[in-house]
Image (cartoon, rainbow, N blue to C red; front, side, top):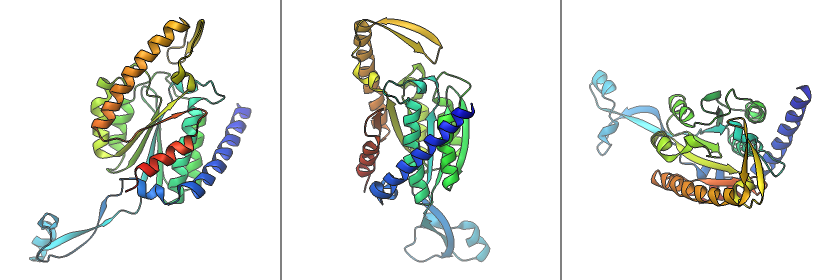
Length: 294
């Protein structure tokens, strides 16, 4: 266990070095300009002037002073970046020397260090078929390293997946306008569109929600020959398939699921990105920033 912890700390340090280099040289001002999460916060009350929006009248102050006053708002300067990370059994899968949970940690690091550089808050929620771990949003390098370490080291109680408890929990603890990065492979029975449609739509209304889909190359290529054996980490059972039949079935299922999911994202006006292990995840995130620039 001690050796595992030393390896994790070494990996956290490496991720920090890589992420800070990218944040400082590539993203620049795109981070702040790319998010819609900036809202308006109350600043003060002042005298009402002709032409002011009557919806901003502070009726309590007006009644006390016997004179109309309006509320004045200013743009919020601080953002909250909140990472919802899938920690179910499928995160242990990987065929390119990198598990999906390691890719999730690298993606989370780029956003968390971007938040740190801009003096914003970052938080973390990890889920399986329930909320497994919650780290409230805060600032600073130590907190950012805490987020990365938790994603790499944390072991959930359940191997199964159901995103709905995490979606509902986030609505209770996050403020309106938070930037929420929902990072998962979006695979499993409980990710069917009918099951997540309502909670995802409610999140899209309250937050700047960005689904980030992580995949292993094998989940995209489907080039399987002969007999193949898989260990299903979510049900903890070994399963054997005919490669040709499995390939055909997986392609059909994936096409139908992706089309349904894309329709759901489009209906709710969500940007989404798909990142595959072993590919340029930094470039994918950079393109997301550029796409969202005003």
